[in-house]
Image 1 (cartoon, rainbow, N blue to C red):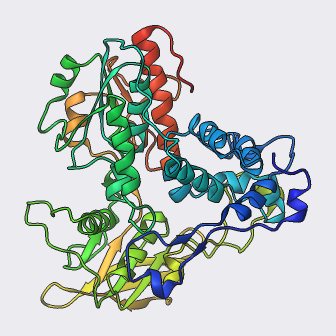
Image 2 (image 1 turned 120 degrees about the vertical axis):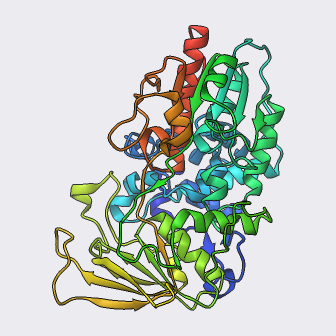
Length: 477
């Protein structure tokens, strides 16, 4: 905890943003960090609440010891706060930027809608740790002689690789793309997290002995059987990439795209990476009326990207009803509530349509998209007759989630079991698949989820692999 009476003395304060008119002119991060004096006051607000739901099962998936490092920040012991934070979370600079902070929803002070600014403090600790040189490689003192292959370098794969390398295993990460990061690099825009944060973690991990193999599409450029023959354990962390297909009439019109190809292409462009050499056409929102179908984080990222590319207008369609401004604390807290939320991207000028279903996409004789035909829906999400309306559109992005992992290649070759949603079957105890030599973690196992859940699963699966290879493990769960 911080100061016993801190929550009574200090109001909640978060990082502020650059003005929308300024931040849409670039792809850089736009948060304005609090100074140390204000951060100390925010940490002081952490109260002696008895049961800290913030790091329980309803709060933080990696079980960050939030009251502990809040108290350390209040005491100005930032280095110990960094050690504490890194003991449960390999990459707090990632989660401090992109996590939706279920810990804050579970905070006892959220009963008064004034939770501790946990996410802001977490990012501040992580950034200070890097700036002060406290984050250093931690290579193992002894080597086990065991070799582990990890397929995919997203947050689950990176977390598992770092944990396994630190206990002495020879860890090799196989990544399909030219650079590491997975969804962190190619899905999340730079205005939410600049890619330098990933690059320095990769350098740290390489110094710890992790070997990265890029442009290696396991199941295509290298077979699963080859991998199993070369390594003592194989871990799949390939993510959930197969987009959910809405099967809309007119979906084949020019100007209609799934969200992820658009975001991936934009991230490549911002990072000066070449486009894929398969005749990929540029997708740009400059001077266009854009409609984004979907109400989640991916849809919001499309909104922010489109504004930065110079879109004329951006409208976001959400089939769900407009949520209440505030949740009923007595029935929901400390769980994640359904309530009205406005992302920084939406606040940049997006029009939002709730209870809106997309009926079809219209185009001209040349096959070019011209509009989106919508209708209001009832409680069962069925279109209501007579409520149809048309949105002019030059570009549509479909961001309605993912159907699971891509089956072709890696999963087909491995022969491991998948559930009816297309996710790899592996439990949360040992993360082992139907093949005794293969483990799976992250979105590939649990389906589309948060970065913080991927880190948790990567850490826990790493311990399971270590226990299997060595008979026991000192790694935490």
